[in-house]
Length: 173
Image 1: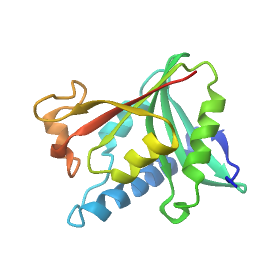
Image 2: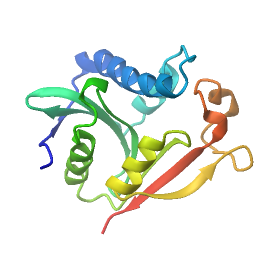
Image 3: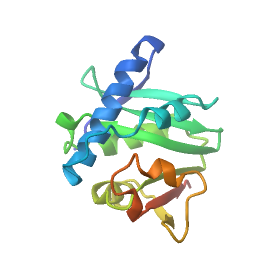
Image 4: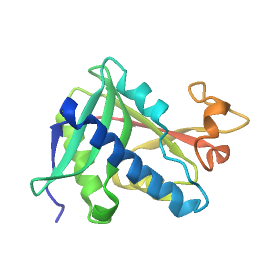
């Protein structure tokens, strides 16, 4: 049985804590693959860029009356972009991510297209998006086919970025 989660807007006074948790979750995943990496993922300037989008929504993922992760979503009414989604590292492997994605879909019933990107080396994320959430890989960004929104200078902030990024899309029924 899938756990029950709900989505709650993040209040302005909770932004700093939310960003710290987001970075902790992403950084842990990076260090699992690249133990020598000492930075934070995503870097503050990438988070700031997403949070400065006019349409941004920061949502806490709540389970059993406790925030256990979050999502940052941008876009219009029918075309949405999942900028970030995370489950706190100590709450992973409990199917909470899949429950969170279902709650996100339910929150945005008018969304016809969802998109996101994730690193080539993040096999767990790829499995999650394709096999659990129904996304399709539609583009592979690499040194031969560069992401127009991701500078090579910015790649230095992400371990393994030189392996490339996948762009995922999910068209809703």
